[in-house]
Each structure stands twice: as C-alpha cells, then as structure tokens.
Amino acid sequence: MTEETPKLPRGKWFGNVRAIEIIRIGMVATVLVVVIVLGRPCADGVARFVESYAPPPDAGAAQPAMKYERLTEEEIKKRFPGGDEIDQDKKAPPATPAAPP
Image (cartoon, rainbow, N blue to C red):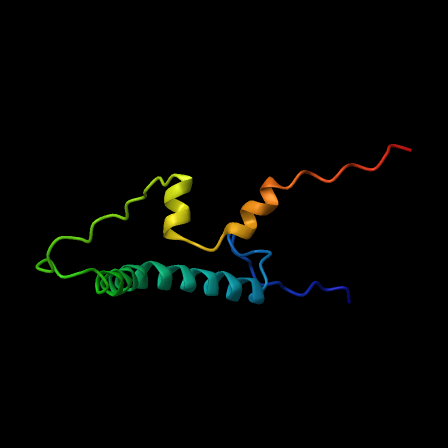
C-alpha cells in the first residue's frame, strides 16, 4: 500500500519558484516596460514646459550684467549717510582686559 503518488513534472526554469514570485517578476517587468515606453513622451513634455519660459527669439538683447563698483570710505559716507555711530565704536579704545588670575 505504499504507492507513490505521481508528481507533475516541473520545468527547468520555474521548478522552485512560487506563484507570488512569478507575479512579482511580472510586475517589475511591467513597470520597466512602462518606464521605457513612457520615458520619451514625458521627457518631451518636460522639455516643452521648460522651453516655454525662454524668452522669444525676437525679444531683443539680454539685459546687461550687473556691474559692481569699488567705493572708497569717503564715497560710502557720501552715498550712505548716518553711519557715524558705527565709526565712533571703531575709534573708541578697546576695553582693558581683565587681569589674569
């Protein structure tokens, strides 16, 4: 009475793979295909969106770059009056340090 029950033959590729693992592999493959197929249209849409902020070609010359000026202390005081109290702090003698212990 010890007859062996016949087993279904398993293929070489999916012999030890469970159904949930096959489903996961299929889902990952589907996501990869979707990314590859939709990558180009999405990239084109983003490129069009970014280019929409570019100025039109007939907009004229770009604005000149900001230029920096070096000012002397006299020019700074002439342009921005009211900083005398800061200069007074600079001219005041430094506080005497406490005697070392």
